[in-house]
Structures are given as structure tokens and as C-alpha cells.
Image (cartoon, rainbow, N blue to C red; front, side, top):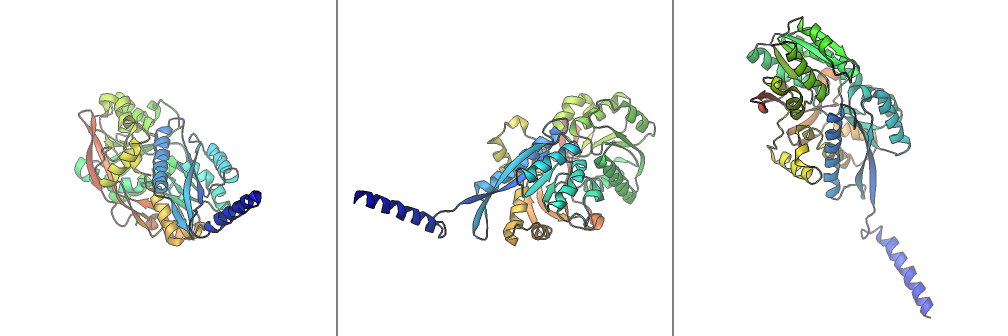
Length: 395
């Protein structure tokens, strides 16, 4: 009799568990795999590591709130990271693993050249990606409706800063230096596009192989054209600081603009006194808004304060945006999500963000946000101006 009772109790317990799963007593949480493919080594890791960490902090924020629901099912984000070393072939290799071994549903790829190399594979497998990438029209166009660029547009940086330089600093000519890849070539195209609109002449456009440390040959050719300003294009943070230092060592007296995600700590460490008077296309590291302060608090729970810098602002709400889109459309269909995302606005640590780019790319897949600039004074990077992107250039 005792064995019969025990057996009955087991049956009743199993029945209760199976029934409660459908009535709200037990909520099984499902994981959605998200692949971050970036440079975790090589000089581009100065970008890649904080970018990946900031995305992870964004996913943690959603998960800590209990995840999100689609059709009554609860989901959480699972981040899987891959090191592509900023090499396009390595990016494709990592994406293959991410899709076919790790079953990712979404991806974020760092860099225009790696992203461009991955687009055929992304399209074949209908993977929606939100990328920290340049690449211009080669990446962002109506043929790539699932490819978003979740980063400030370099066109926006130029559109906001060039008119200021022209009016207030007297910059009428520019020399541009970029890495010799798809990212760099697209950036020079963007430089010339915006410069022509605002009536600045690009008198030199030079390229170098990623990974080099000696920029003297290309800088010598640029300086020979006597530009009022040298801008460092899509150079990685370490290379930007080296370009600044070596330009000054060659005797260049004009202005230097470190455009794309420079690291003020690296600039100070590498360029030293040569940093004085340079311009940096980056927000101040100090958390000034409530959203920025909350991000900084989350950062300190995982990482030392000494590793904090402004690079953590730019992707810290990627999952706010993506989750908001999924919540709104209640679907995991990538095209349904993409169509929903393009009309969203959301709050980041540096202000309101949205998708745009129709004016330039014929599709709304470029993230828009205010542009922040700093300058080095007295050995420190200090806030300079914050400007919105002028209408009529990206929209």
C-alpha cells in the first residue's frame, strides 16, 4: 500500500508540473543566441573590446529585467563572442561558426570591410545584423534590408564638424588618411561627398596597410599638399594617435582631426605634448546624463574604473532597440523585425537615437544621433561642442 501511495504521489507531482507549465506556474526561459564578431586582438581591439562589452552590458540590462516575451514565451539574450582580428576572411570564418555551429539568430559585426565580406552569408541565411561598421553605400543599400549600421555615421561626423571648422577655425583644405580597405575607401568617398557640400577642398587622399606603425611616407605626401587640416578617417585609435605624433614630428603645423572613435587615453599616452590642439570625434567620458550615469554604474559592476572611456556609450543600448522592436512586432521573422526597427526611436546615454539615411542610402538603416567633439587643452581632452546632424544630408 505504501509503494502504491508513493507511486501515486510521483504521478500526481509530474501531472502538476506538466499542467503548471501551461498555466503560468512554471516559466521556462528560452535563450536567443546573438553573435558579436569583432576584434578582440590586434590594434583594432581598442575599438572591438569596448564595443563588445557595451553590447554585453546592454543585453545584461534586458536579461536582469527578466527578459522579454513573444507570444507568451519568455526569452533572454545569450551573447557569443568571436575574434575576427579585423580581418575580413576571419570574420567570414567566425560567422560560419556562429550560424552553423552556434545557431545565432542575430549578429553584430565590427568594421566595414569585415561586414561587407560577411554580407553574402548574412543574406543567404536571413540573419538580421546591427553592425558597428562604415562601408557607405557598399554596406547600406536597399539590396541589404537586414543590414543595419548601429554606429554614428561618419558622414554625420563630417556634416556636423566641417561647417564648424570652416566658419570658426578657417579650414578650407583637408588631407585625408585611411586604411587601404573597403572601410577606408568608403570613408574617403564620404569625406569628399560632405566636403564638396560645405565647400572645403580635399587636396590629398592617402591609404596605408592596416597594422603598419610607420606613417611617414603617406604623411609626407599629404603634408606636401599643405592642407589646413589632416583628418585620420577610419584609422583605428592606436593608428590615429601615431599619425598625430608622426605628423607633428615631420613639422606639420596645421590642425589634426581624429575622426572615428579615438581614445583620448591612447592619444595622450602615444602623442604626448603633440596632442595639444588636436580635435577628437568622441564624446566626453564623464557621465553627464542620467542614462550615462546608469551605464557607468553597470560598467563598474563588471570592470575596473580605469578601463572606462567614451567608447562604451555607442552600443550600450543596442539591445534596448532590438528588444523594443521584437516586443512591438511580436515576431522573430527578420524582415518583420527590420520593418519595425526602422521607425523606432529610443534613448541612449548621449540622447535620442533613431534610424535614418534615406537621403544618402535610399533606405533607413543608419543610426542617427548627436555628434560630439573634443579638443586637447592643457594635456587633457575637454568637451568642445555637441551638434545635431544638419537636415538634408542623411535624413
